[in-house]
Length: 474
Image 1 (cartoon, rainbow, N blue to C red):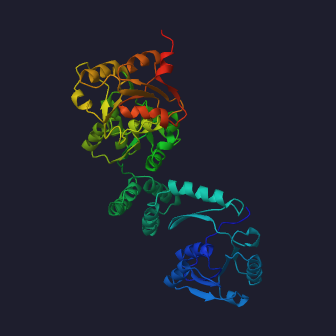
Image 2: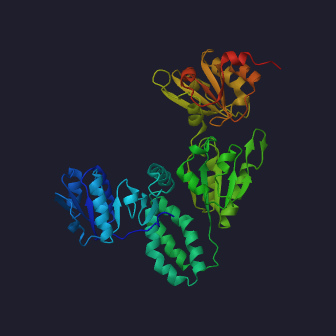
Image 3: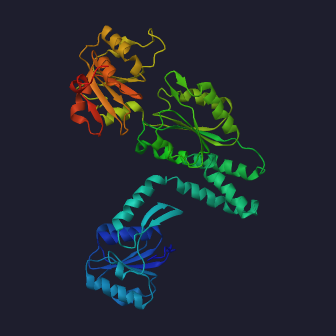
């Protein structure tokens, strides 16, 4: 290591900052957040810096830097564009055995400012040793998204109970297991949900429980999105990483599944047309069974669990058994696939409303209200309608939708295998018969489909009307 990472306790400690511009302002912001008493010396000091120092009991000295200013200081920072002055500050500080930082001059530094992720009292520092500060900032940005702000409240809660837990458990291993259960279980989730009083009550109760008592687990009903793992929410990823067992659907891509905790058990309970690996009632019972065993159960569904995902049925079963649960929405296929195909679902010149409809019909006399679906200036999105496409097209036309209404099929949307077939309401079913695009697929009907040629951006294979006409017949 070029540098040993250390954390300075600067509360009420005097620090000298040479320079009064925007860079000095950034450094002063960090120093005052850490509680330092900052003295700034410069010929000019920007108003923002002056106001900050006044608010935090700092001092501004207008004039020349001289070595006597180092007296009784604990830390020195030079943030000027005068190289000779920066070098003088460096040598003066070294002569006094004071830690010194010269901004953007690693050779003149005895310490450096890292990129910081602040979840106080949790603080993460990232450094490239002055070699690649932009890369350090990029890594910090990634960590900012991975570590929720609520980790600050969680760490404060842990701090309040640290001594009580140490008194309750004499063994280091017992304390480790206890805190792992707290930090990866329902108590932490209460904090993340902003329910701090409940979290504290649960932690107090947990301290009073005997070690042998069996606890009820929790179920995470998580929307896995349409397949692209980068479309997962941060909360979905966090819960996927802490579940003990995963029940996943056929629509969950391998890339999304790979983001689950490595040592978690994985159980496929997917449903495909006329082929259900596990009936819905069986899935409900599995969730209850494993939660009652004290496990953290992940129910991972494609898209959004509350949009044609039967998530509500599963939660009702959990509610019957008083099993706690959380629901994380996912990006539903209609939104994601249309976006990746360059088809906006609404547009002020084409469609002012959108309807999501299931196309999985139990029989030809379905309960779909086609009279409502054929309203003008409306986009219709059919989920699971690939095998019902001829019937859906026929009924829409019969109820007044124009035969030349643009329509499209998006197959395996958001994945590298995405394909789009564009046609009209009258001929799309015939083109699909030749093209044989695979499920999962989405059907979009409406004038917005005409925007596909101009707005398509994802690197999918696009099948236009002309291209589909050239496909060989069986």
